[in-house]
Image 1 (cartoon, rainbow, N blue to C red):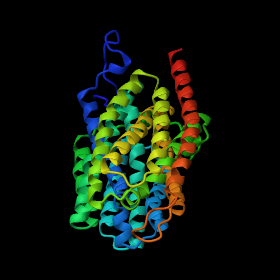
Image 2: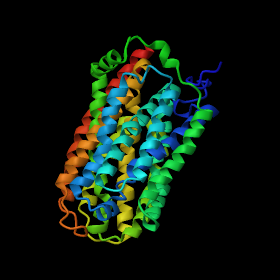
Image 3: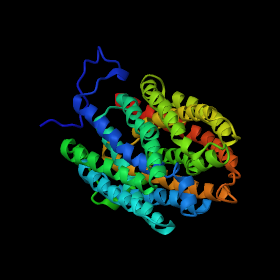
Image 4: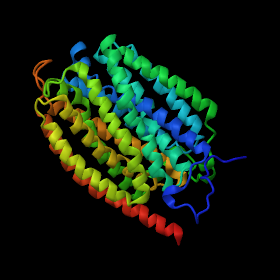
Length: 426
């Protein structure tokens, strides 16, 4: 019986590490995980572009909207911790389908929410299930692809982020303006059902990790994962990486509309071009991450992102092409951080800990993001529904400090990965 976890056999004399080819099944894994991530990211990301609409139609304050955004993140973080002990105890396909089904149900609840409290509850339910899916996907990638392939794989799978910007968010905003914001979530539900069917029919069981389990119960497995020093370095690096993005994201659309004075119906154009820049840069960054030292790529991306964050958060009314250009360069910097950092972190855990490690990692990522969204909601102030946001630039300066700290933590992760690779050779 063919084991899907194995990488393809290649002639090492002819194939350099960054050119190890993918099998047909591995290509399917990349495509299906990219589409799956597309729905997860779109469901989460669409809240930000809908922010101005939601705050005006529901009468939400900035702090209430920050709570709606953070509700998903914090519930996802808690569920990830609770699920971590079980993450390596089951076939990864079954685990993926269980949580993806819950995610679809939660998103359907979002589609029928009618006020602040029902929307808040719906986002909590969606987060409980949706937050674990990325961790399971990362574990699947780590099981099936070698370290020298993961930069390219991360680059392609992370293109789901760009895809949500190019197609998902513009279409979602169009539906929201043509009908109402509920239609946007209905669109996500329909797409997710189609992808779920493809997973059921085509994805093979992933069970190789079950042969290597040592812990008797889930709680013991979780504890053994958390107490490992090397793992904790990876956890801290991931948490820091998440803080910055969650600070800006909830209020991006409101800032562009009310401070930069770009009309609401022009937002899809901005998100589309931002996504196009991401979809170009991410595969390139993935390839470079497999050829060049991953930390060097991360370092360069961080410097670019720090500069552009300060520029972006201090924008005044400018033409739309200026906003597009700044957004494109900013996201190039952000993507150049995400891809190499994810590839490096995937190499930290052992096979028998991957599910638990990725679950805890994703949980800390979500919880850190939730805290950041709440923090942003109290820093940013809007006097009326149409007045400019105040103190948005403060978030940019805080992000710069966080990025500087993350440079050190990801450097430590890079050193751990290199040491682990050296020991495996000896």
